[in-house]
Length: 268
Image (cartoon, rainbow, N blue to C red; front, side, top):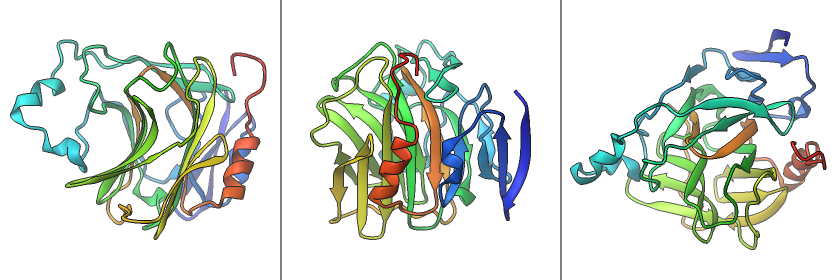
């Protein structure tokens, strides 16, 4: 597939693939990975570092306080890096990650990381992506999907028995926002997740609908020195991963979802 590199803003690099991408016309889009058979983002700040690692312990959050007793979970019997495969995605291709069954699922194991501090505004933004489960459904599994690490916390999208959440994981405490009232995952069905944050307000959307909102006792991400995006190890396909340097309003989240709403072709 042919591509062209364009510099559209100072420090921002855009690689336009031959296939059309409906996210490109959205205001404030600073990072976009469409996974058209490459890990390289379609849009990213100049100098973005891509890491393909089996596991790097996150710099922030309660994961950093692992004791010697559970250190063994970082060294499972099967330490083979997870298989990363490009498969039919929401649009074009997507990234499928295979889980390691020996892992202790309480912890998140990143397998693709982007060091991209310049993609983030200091105190507000939007994280959005499409995802579908592979071989599991419902809300009973314990799986991680995507995480973003800031100076003071890590924002994790994950499924836990009883619901799907955004977990803001700081060093000494945490806060979760649940997708309230959502019926859960279905194998082979694409779902659009989005999290917006700004001082005093954080919102969690599923398929363009606001299902979780928090305004009190917030853990507010600060992206002054750190900005890392990661795909977590698990049984899922991720596609159309987007970072915006502003907190998009509900109308924009709905429009972003509708511009790529799933069709009835089964594989998309």
